[in-house]
Image (cartoon, rainbow, N blue to C red; front, side):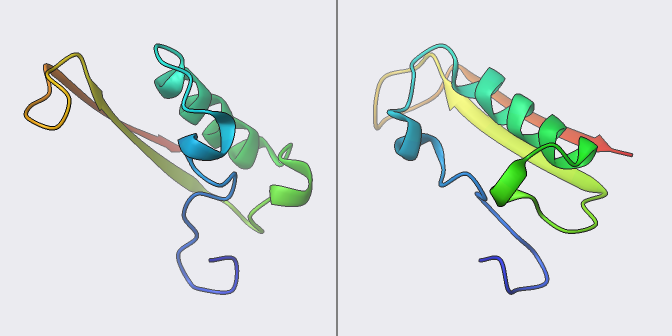
Amino acid sequence: DYGGKVVFSPRGGLMSMSHPTGASGCAQVVEATWQLRGEAGERQVPNCKAALTHVTGGGVYGLDNAACTVTILTI
């Protein structure tokens, strides 16, 4: 939602990029970094000062997760 106070998934989420197994977390951090640097092009969130990414994996699909990472980036 670009018109709201909080913007989420400006790139469309991982499904919009075929959910690349193993690269999902990296892709999220790269997008967050581009947003903070003002380098996200048409997806740019105006005045972006903070970004959060969340990814889980390594478990049995639909049952549990072996790893969970939350990354918070600020400028």
